[in-house]
Image (cartoon, rainbow, N blue to C red; front, side, top):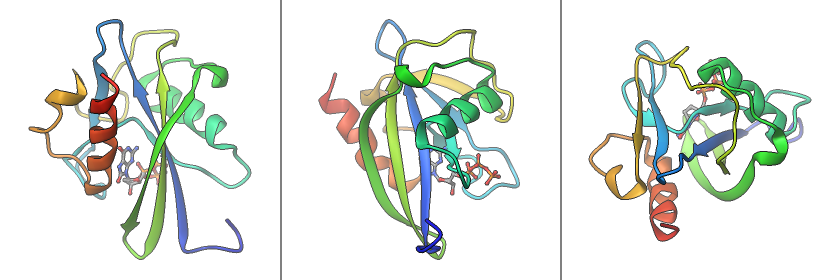
Length: 136
Ligand SMILES: Nc1nc2c([nH]c(=O)n2[C@H]2C[C@H](O)[C@@H](COP(=O)(O)OP(=O)(O)OP(=O)(O)O)O2)c(=O)[nH]1
């Protein structure tokens, strides 16, 4: 990443419950893309693996504990994000400890992929949602 400062690496989770619904959170006011619904996650920081970054973000944002081994690589998106090229890695996660709480977001919701289309989401997420739909 140091040799490619125009690339932004983001990780996100499709936390999936026993009836196949996936957790989305609303981006808070005052942040880029405020009000849009996203998969929980965030930027990979210097020195972190993608999986350890996602374990950290899920704890910070939702208060849940996830074992990195329970993050299953699913798909990715490639999109412009400001002046950078963003690569967003999406992982499936069906096992975690604790009940997700909106610690950094105004609101959470559980939706099947087929029912996400009526929610405003970042443009990069559109192909991710279409991919998730093919899996259900
Ligand atoms: N978490 C997440 N971010 C997404 C999704 N789709 C999408 O375009 N993004 C973008 C929004 C942001 O520009 C970027 C994630 O950065 P962020 O600001 O949420 O990251 P962070 O939690 O590390 O926050 P910060 O420390 O930079 O404030 O990725 C998504 O589904 N989930």
